[in-house]
Image 1 (tube, rainbow, N blue to C red):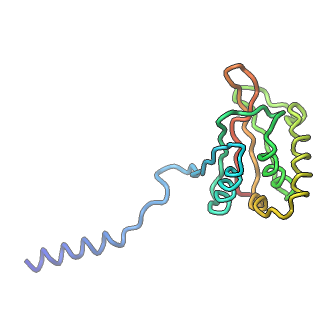
Image 2 (cartoon, rainbow, N blue to C red):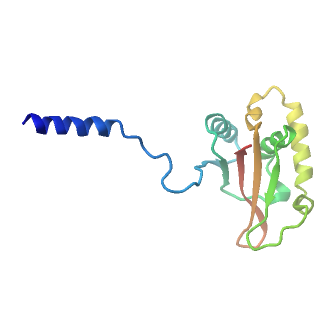
Amino acid sequence: MKISFLILASILFLSACQTMATKAGNDKEVSVNVSFLDLEGFDADLALALRSSAAPITVDFFEKPSPNDTPARLQKWVSQVRENGGKVKVEMPKNELTPKNPFAIFGIIGSLWSGASAISKMTEQQKYKLANGRDAIIRLERNAAKELVIGQVIFVKK
């Protein structure tokens, strides 16, 4: 009886010391998703995600905008990345040729500059500083009508 108790106690003791694996067999990093809705709640959700996670933050869209019509609310965040030394990369849809300068095609540079001027006017809003230290990836895709749209924007830690 004492031996069974001793064996049971040893098993419980050892199992209490067991560590859990941090990744389940793959090296893919977990990301946090935030849905874009052109309301102030989006800013709060993105700010919270950027503040609380070092993982990539993926912005998904309910209605995917044209790269030429990037929402001003999102432009401010992407401009903050660019203005503070981050890189803004544009990824073309899969199986499409990537131009040397994808910004030239879409007019995103103009959008980013207008977003940058908006940031300089809104220095009292500290929330955009949460994008500092990150890069932004703008993933483009084709919609059902074969138009080029922004599929996702991903903020990744540098």
